[in-house]
Image 1 (tube, protein in one colour):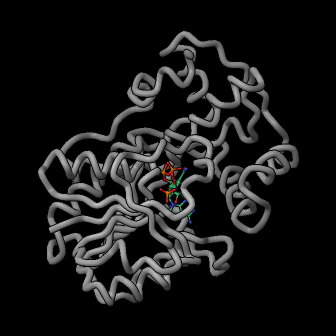
Image 2 (cartoon, protein in one colour):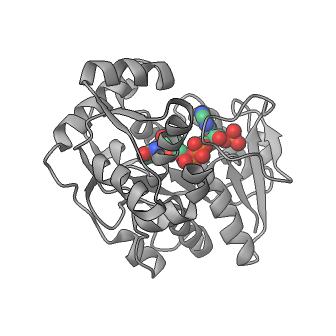
Image 3 (cartoon, protein in one colour):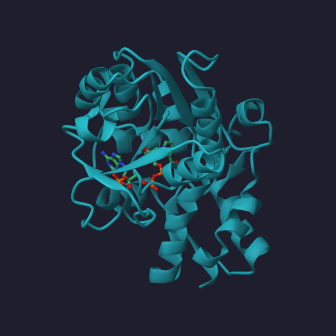
Length: 283
Ligand SMILES: NC(=O)c1ccc[n+]([C@@H]2O[C@H](COP(=O)([O-])OP(=O)(O)OC[C@H]3O[C@@H](n4cnc5c(N)ncnc54)[C@H](OP(=O)(O)O)[C@@H]3O)[C@@H](O)[C@H]2O)c1
């Protein structure tokens, strides 16, 4: 059995690949064509052996594969479903988002929910991983500190329960190792980190754990929106994110124990993430 891992540049994809290989499960890494293009800021470099594929026509990368790890992209999901059907894929683990559970009916505001709905139409078992905020969002703060000397974000006091990328990968590894036909078929797993903390507290921990001073500049919602729009584009998804942060100020984020239940180990704390990524802030 070969597991095809699409989005090979992705941080989670790379941990999934390493974890499956450690269990001696063969993997095939796929990266979108045109990887000569710069990786998104914060994305990892392309791993050795990754094969290019066209996400609008992914048949070649799926040939002979029974299991797939997939990033959510509503634009290319229909082509994926058709090609996976053709290839006889039996199990798809989709990296989605807790945002898919927000109950919005606006597809543009909820690309993850839209991708879930499309991927669910295929003739294979599905498991949707639905993490909330990533600890790795702090990589952008590190980038900002290096380039501007400060971290400029809105809603410093919004509460999140950020999750380590390795915990998300560990869940994917368990689900893929169990294979189709196991208890994960048809399930969506909301995944959180171990505790609720404000974005301000995460920034304070950079100093407490790594000894690196952090200058915080809290932007007004209008300023934050303008700066974020330049990075992620303006539109309904940004509207959702801004209202989400506003709703979480003074409102601790619920946590769950799905990481522990699915992997057998507790979710890693943010302090662990910081030591795992110390060079982002110290170099
Ligand atoms: N940041 C958060 O707080 C958060 C929360 C919940 C969910 N998510 C979701 O988690 C994913 C990010 O995971 P990560 O940290 O492992 O990713 P990452 O390191 O930022 O890399 C993302 C990789 O996804 C692959 N990809 C596949 N289809 C893509 C597309 N249409 N557009 C852009 N990239 C595409 C690309 O790999 P190749 O270049 O190799 O093809 C890309 O390098 C995103 O889908 C995001 O929406 C994020």
